[in-house]
Image (cartoon, rainbow, N blue to C red):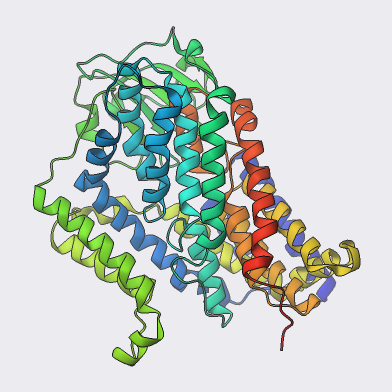
Length: 518
């Protein structure tokens, strides 16, 4: 097939996939996998290339980290931590609350999956805010943003970093060390925290729009449930899907985009928050289900876990972090020749040990893994290969070099960052990173410089989803629980996006210079 025809096929396929992702017609994993099938049928991808992503080290590491995060969540160590940080005091203010909780969330999210961190913290923060007389809506968006900022600080902080890391390994690069991205991510986190502490209270709405919403009863009969992508009633109406017969609860109202709607008038969407009337056992029965991203009844729902398991879960987490940090150092290669004691090695060991000690139920391990995210990552890696095989990545990189004044590496870096960031605000961040990677690789080859600055920019840009509730799952969760409007995210998130961009453009070339390729 002619090379130009292949370029147009891949370009048309990418546009079609992005349109379907933005419209939310199908699950992201299936949309991207359909694109892989299209490129395989046209001969742009071989069957081996189409399946290679499912064996990618970064993708498998993400899967195992889901299990590690579940083990830490079940240990209830996070619940104890946040309760200690948030005492009920009369002199408590929003800013003092930010100072107590946001830095801790950044630190925790640097090593754990963001979603369980946010899910654990939301009900505790809501209950604490109401007891202290503070507005709950002042805290939920900052909670999600702090989790995102923390994820940028380490290799395992977000799946996006691991996706780019895995693609770098496939291309023969060394990949990132545990804290390498923290050179920029840590600085963005510090500046971002200062921005939220100083200005967050002013730029976020209060609880005035929640006054008429029903307060949760102590009996736990009223439950807030955030629908996940696995909910079987997605894209179906209230009349078409009998929620009560499936889950034994009635829907009182549906919260979406800052509005509270009668259930009869809506078509269910992922991210909708349902206010349910239950018999008081709903969370016990459905707490482990991945049908719901979060369940909350306004009171503490603490998993039963022996004290020794809590300490063991934390100890294993520390071992994993320390092992991945020091395992790639030269002295370890001399100490244990023939073995790669990298992140993949340690997450495998810790996940198996957590299962053996019963920290999470091994028989239910499939429930704790977000399979659509894994299919999305694997498919995005295959699409990235299609962009290279067709010549599309090289064509885009050549265009970037020509558009940028005198083919300046700084200009190309800025364009790549902005493009990746815009894509991640409206589709999944992992796909945005995978699509940008081959362009970054080709652009560095055109410019004759080290591609590392471009790889770092992709990681940061794909994670900085602050201006929209669509691009990041934690944003979607807090939007429903806090009943935020889209403009609330734009109002506080857009300045944070600009801060992250400026810091990145200054620091990335400083830490990873545009050194000529040898």
